[in-house]
Length: 210
Image (tube, rainbow, N blue to C red):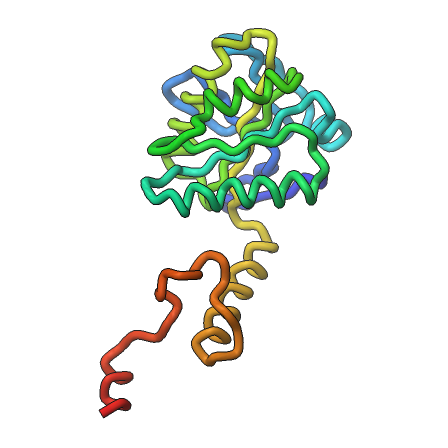
């Protein structure tokens, strides 16, 4: 897969496939030319990002797409739909959904399912926009805890979605579709369906109906 770069400041640029070091209190970025691949909860090895480019996702890799989790069942089911889309699009044989909190399956559940299907490396992909506390602390901690039960399985927590150019297209598509729905030219999308949220609000509308 191509290695994208995220410019976080004027001083340095970091590859988006670089991993996080887990199991320590002060989490820091991996060096730009190094990928920190955890093996179990305690030890680690480093490999060049060129290896990340060459190897990609293999048959013995398990991918976990993890979101925050919600008390709203419909929101959690959307992750299942996305995982199905992701699996069909990529052809990866082992892909599991997980919720960081509030719902099941948990990261530990998904990790176990990946191993049961034959994975000897688990790739945890946070379905989050930006690298906040959940990415810095919670997801690495939960993944490290899950990995304790599978000491022969390596794992990596990848970067969140971040400043990816394709997200511009996604956001623009959402905006245009919602405006088309309000204008009566399109049905509600799967996200808004049945919620009655995709509509115009404001006092100016009330005045126009008087």
